[in-house]
Amino acid sequence: MASFFNYYVFFFAILLSTSSAQNGLILPIRKDTNTLQHYTSIQMGSNRAMINTVIHLAEQFLWFECDNYTSSTYAPIPCDTQKCKIAKGSGCQVECHGPQRPGCTNNTCGASTFNPFESFIHGGTFGEDTLYSKDHMGVPQFSFACTNSDYKKGLASGTTGILGLARTQISLHKQIANKLNLPEKFSLCLPSSGLGKLYVGGGSSSKSDVSKSLITTPLIINPVSTGPASFVQGEPSDEYFINVQSIKVQGEPLSVKSSYFIIDKDGVGGTKISTINNFTSLHSSIYKPLTRAFIKAASDMKIKSISAVAPFRACFRSSTISITATGPSVPTIELVLPGNDVSWKIYGANSMFPVNKNVMCLAFVDGGSSPRTSIFPSTSIIIGTYQLEDNLLEFDLVLSQFRFSSSLLVQNKTCSRL
Image (cartoon, rainbow, N blue to C red; front, side, top):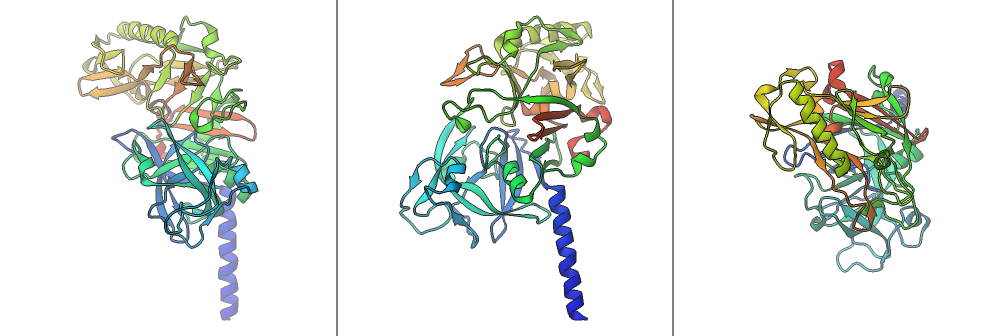
């Protein structure tokens, strides 16, 4: 009888594990109110250490501080191995002068870890360990990089690294897809407050009513590498671009040259999605017409303009703005995409930032007019997290499609109530 019971428990555990794997990995997303960064929590290693990491669509892999990380299942990735090549390792840590531990091992594949809040590339080493989600589903031999505590400056309090979601071989979604035989896709729902979710390889978002009404547009490839985290001479960008063709304010298109919306042969221009920029950044030749059009449309709605508050240029007296289900009642901004009447609508909750109780500002910033940032090509439109909050976003790398909901508030939902 006991053996039958043990068999039943084992069989049930297998079914539960298989069901979890089929649904993919689900991770929580929180917002740090001081930095406005969005981060998630994972568990790593034999001790299932809780690791909080900032979500970054442009980082190639997971990295975190390993100074206090211990795990009996950790294994360094040796230099000159296939795994090191897949990770695009940089150099080799031949000898570590100190007690052997994660991040300090001999003959270990080197990693170039990029902290976007310092705009600096640091050194690290690659290793493997088991990654767990909050529902205890494990992903064995998950590749990541170890750094030390000096490298986490600028990160939200309580976080110790970056979770990479770029188009690479060792990003979170790529490794989970390969190891659990799941489709390579992930969904983000960044909360304005409360708890959002990151779904990898499927998850409950694919079964929700909201996901069935998502708008679809192609993901496009920038042929030129666009930043330090992903820069390899001659290779395309690892970041996520979409084809915004124009912008409308209250239904009226801005007068902007179409060339600013197109990615040229040098990788300059276009529109990318960022989980690091707090506010959407626009090329000056797009930003200035946008603010002028918005101020005029707001004036037509009897909204009173006041002096600018940096870094914003268009600010308004809060008492002249009414509040609706989709946030402040202000002119609607639309990012126009390919197709018949396809656009990403941005309502007041995502366009107006409350500077204080008396002032609200248009939450877009001037990205300048230089075609390059250092040696990297500039992007005309970088959609930031304030505009992404309470929008369900799906990145499908199998079909090369991006799906989005626009504001969930239209459906009386938020990321914390999805």
